[in-house]
Length: 378
Ligand SMILES: C[S@@+](CC[C@H](N)C(=O)[O-])C[C@H]1O[C@@H](n2cnc3c(N)ncnc32)[C@H](O)[C@@H]1O
Image 1 (cartoon, helix red, strand yellow):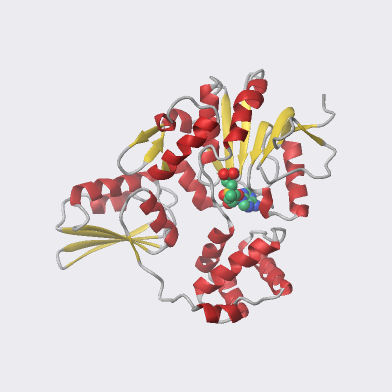
Image 2 (cartoon, rainbow, N blue to C red):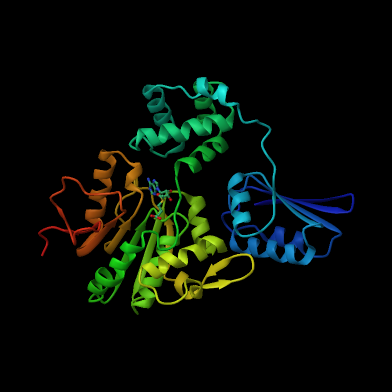
């Protein structure tokens, strides 16, 4: 992180450069905000996310100064949205580009399957992320939307931007990695986990759980809450992975906006929960933060299903709403990875619209639920 500070017209300006995913080198920042100023402005340049300490410092500054004398500027949509979710006011500075009109867009977003595949190969070779076996229709839609936002003149110039400019690629990557999630999403499945699957697994002295494609962490923390209510949390550890470092940092922060959390209370109850979901959080006027005894049982790290391999043996693998973005070949590869990573008496749990077609090596544990066990393994 690089910090530049200067005064102009009785205002202290602090510019913070580089992504702030790690708390390394943040001491300069804390030194610059210490003290009392007539007006204070902080601008985060190209940061997608901020670590916990900096967010807490911003909230203290909002409380200390008020919105008139303290302003936060952001240059990415991701950070701007994240801060708004946490009720931290900020002003997003837009890039010097304008969104095209609908008419322009028609011509622009026409590109052939071959051109699309060519772009995906370039992305793999240059940026190391392999989208070649993702569902083409989803890719086409997201790439078209990103092209419009980036105001490329045509597909070729868009391709050049993506391959040569890491920041443009990063924006496309964030659009491609769809991170929609919530606490106790698909509550009927969580009920099944609560009533059948986890009690079955309780006979193991220790439990290793893998939450795959965890996005901003809600799924893994929901599992930890379930385990706590079943008195199984102490002996369990949840490995929560995703290939998107930005959402993983969000998950690691453990801060959640209040309105969706309150809405999720209904799903928690449908999953058989008898408390208030908010009891698992420290709630302040800005946001809710997951309690440390839940958080410490979840470890987050980067794992890419298209390129990384087996890293442990698990009693439960939960991979919801991830396979739907893959073509059948990639789904097959990923399920093979799960098979190698599963304890012989373990469970694999998929999302509502996902399935294991034509596989003889897994059986459905119970009709109506996408919960599977390995077949013929005793
Ligand atoms: C829609 S979210 C699902 C979140 C959560 N599992 C749920 O059901 O609420 C899909 C997640 O899969 C992740 N993902 C997509 N491709 C991936 C890959 N190749 N490796 C690891 N994670 C991936 C995305 O980054 C995203 O966070």
